[in-house]
Length: 161
Length: 166
Image (cartoon, chains in turn cyan, brown):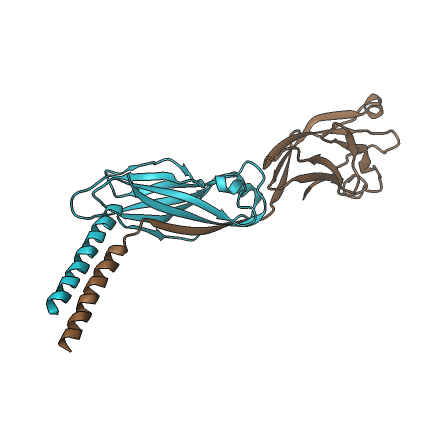
């Protein structure tokens, strides 16, 4: 009886480890929001300049034995979700501690479709957690904007290359 | 009892392995909020600040158009109208001289259609949004129609531009 139970435990342990290895290939993504992504316009002139929130959030991504692409995708909700604001939000890489990572250092305009932020190269050594800090930018407006409170989410996805 | 303890141990060990592995995540999100009320501003800048003089009978008997009298910068998140009005029915003749009554309607502002609108204390539309751009800049012309029936002197005009949603 004990042998049967021990066999079951072994199966459980092995299957768990297999899953862990698969999960390792996808690596673990953690996003830490450093400050509220909130802005309330109070003067018309403010719409003519970009509003930047420095170091708004940090993406932490473990190294993995495969190249990892990290994407960002914008979702705007509310009555006027399809308005011009959906085309006015951007990210800019402020800091990274991953020397081999190929990252777009210029302003990255967010959209409803995933846009690539960076590609973290494969690493066969021990697991290392890398950090990527991003500024959040509301770009200047050139055309009318419907008065509203716009709620949005930025969804980050990691996929093996 | 010993068997039950062993079974419990096996189950916990198996479940724990699965949970640690499952914590790997490829999907995270941050959320935020942007508040944009209806915002409007109108800025008026005098281009030529020199006094406008009428020094001869011919000057008095003819109208004068001052092209490029002022620059108006409109910033608005919504369609808009700019109205113009005089601060009072009569021009300001300075300290102690306001017995000289020169009507503000002597001054006209050219509207977007090219017509001159005489000033009054009632706001009259002079510019209107014709595109969906947040910022628009206009150069405004002025016309002054003096008359010999008004007493000579130095007069100041207070011209008010206001913006409202259309």
